[in-house]
Image (cartoon, rainbow, N blue to C red; front, top):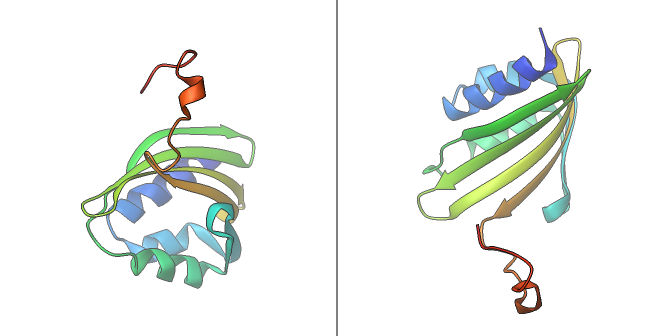
Length: 125
């Protein structure tokens, strides 16, 4: 199966709260890093547990998935009823039909306000 299809399927299963299906997308020894919060998740079971335990009220909207060989990048929007809208850009490595490595950059929209000095050069989104 194409690596991009595996990553898209993982996000689809995450949205469905199909935790067994999410786990099946990952190699047992997978490692996922979250540099923004300085955390490393070692092992498929830990990755699934962290996501399954996240407070409910969220949904997943995949904005894009781009692949080159075994490397896949996904951009996802995760609105949460109480915590606001998050965006995540994820870099995945897929081998033998499973995700073996990930590096995700999570941010909350508006968490990094634009400095006033840039106002003359930018447009608000």
